[in-house]
Length: 153
Image (cartoon, rainbow, N blue to C red; front, side, top):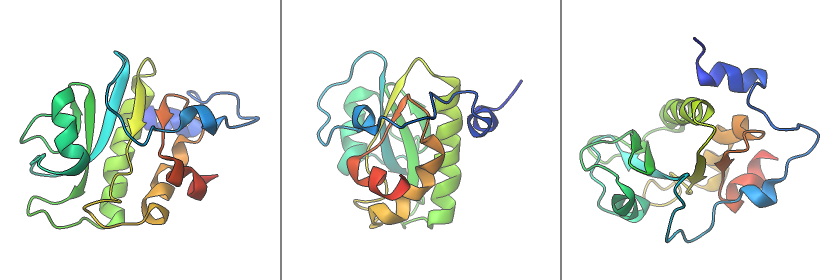
């Protein structure tokens, strides 16, 4: 059995690499509804206290209070803060982004709408967080915020 991340890095899940059609893979700025195959990706804290920002919005699509990482209904939480609500380092966030990429590689039937995680309450700039997603360049089921694309292509 393979892990999805290794397959993504080898290219097994990549689309045609001759070009990147990022225009069709941009997360909308305002997400008010989800299609059945769409998953809302949001920044969370390790305690899963979904009280503000995109985390609070994620509750309406199944985010579970007390669960700080992973799939929850039609949402996926990526920790950007610790249990005490202190911002994680970019290196720590990278681990959780990697876990998400691995999950997305194993669930190609779903479309993952990544919000600008870490760029709100956690206080990072898109230039800090976007490079963590450079390995999704050819993963056609992952959509990124417009501002992230500027830093990875």
